[in-house]
Length: 327
Ligand code: GDR
Image 1 (cartoon, rainbow, N blue to C red):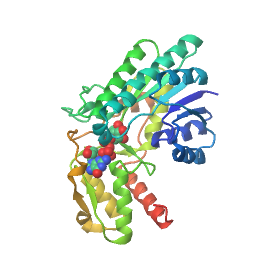
Image 2: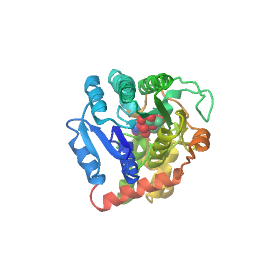
Image 3: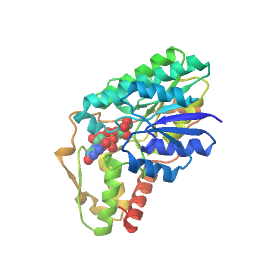
Image 4: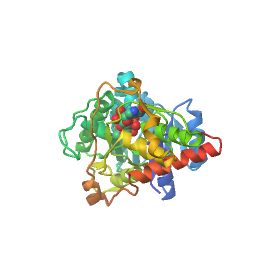
């Protein structure tokens, strides 16, 4: 039975990854931070089969020891700062956890492979944010890396160091993930912020969603699909970079409209959206949309849910939470 080691296992993607890997018979080990008790409880309730280990991305020596002790066949490095907005407030921490820590993980994997003579296959989740103000779209694996946010810069470093270790003989795949959503998305991200508020407005008939840039265009997919691409790329015979995206782009305003309509607000949806400068970022890409042809061709991957379904599932979930008094 293959053994996987997952950092960031308590996050949205980590949870779906644990589900998928356990479901297909992989032994799953996850690293959790001390004090993350609520997230650990939720994870164990959903996926009781995971084996958890205390660890911290910031503790390079401890992480190295943990990877050597667990001795995985596959490593998924999902931990780090995932909020682009937060990265503007904490650029150094973001560089450490979403950038430099990738070198620690990959170096530990490489040493494990050297010591045991067994293949260790790794997944580094890259981000569409590495493209920043791209000159063209859709973006693909050949689009120049030119980030415009601290998060994007950190992920660009991690993307490049993944290539470095691939060149050293380690199987390191990167999935260049465009936005991917689900009911498990925290409220800090625009989609869940909108769907949770839309459900509330739909139920009460009043209320306003305060948002930042309504014109930003993003490519929103269904998170479990993106996790499936990660597993496929780790298990593919050759390691490579893969854009993972739907190829469809919508503005934040269109997301809000779709969510509010789904919640039953109808044509008056515009009355429930306001721009609040607090949520504007110092700089960001106007349009991110990905061309996942290479993942389709080489991995046999394709998205299973389009924009309307993603919005619908999230709003329905938030309406259900409200009904059960759990919002
Ligand atoms: P993003 O996700 O930064 O694209 O990163 P987020 O949902 O935070 O923002 C998407 C777009 O919405 C605009 N926006 C707002 N964003 C937030 N959070 N809150 C608001 O009120 C708001 N109003 C407008 C943003 O400016 C942005 O344009 C996600 C994360 O999952 C990353 O980890 C991942 O790498 C990238 O997607 C691809």
